[in-house]
Length: 166
Image (cartoon, rainbow, N blue to C red; front, top):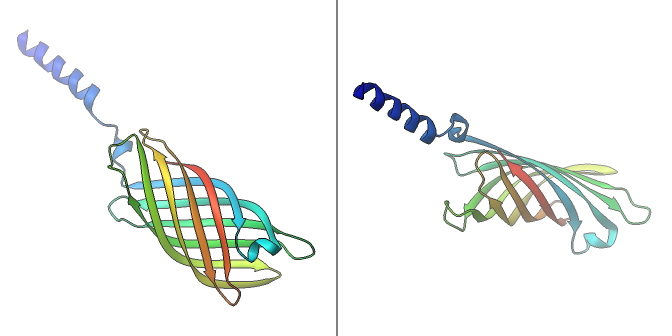
């Protein structure tokens, strides 16, 4: 009887303290949306627009693959600008990992396809800062990024986005 009680207690303890399998997956997927705002000379010909993005991070590798679409309206008679991008970024935690709110920086580069009458694909870079709430299974975040695309005509804009990481 004593052995049966010990087994029952062990099962209850194991069941209540074991981490769910989902929490141990080595892949994180994120979705975000927000504002795309041109800066510098681009702010004279483009108006604010929208940003939508997706990210894929393998936890064991410190790099994250980001894809996004940014669309900004033309001011006046120009054409609207759509930017499709694929970038590899390196997120770096600023706060310790067990804090309830994590602050991080990120930087990277990739390919940026611009469409406004004429289509071109150029290399570019991004740098930013963000904050994430560390809730199990769901990690809401907000981040600001600066983007510079180095083509025949340099394009610079910022994105302000909020999203969720699984």
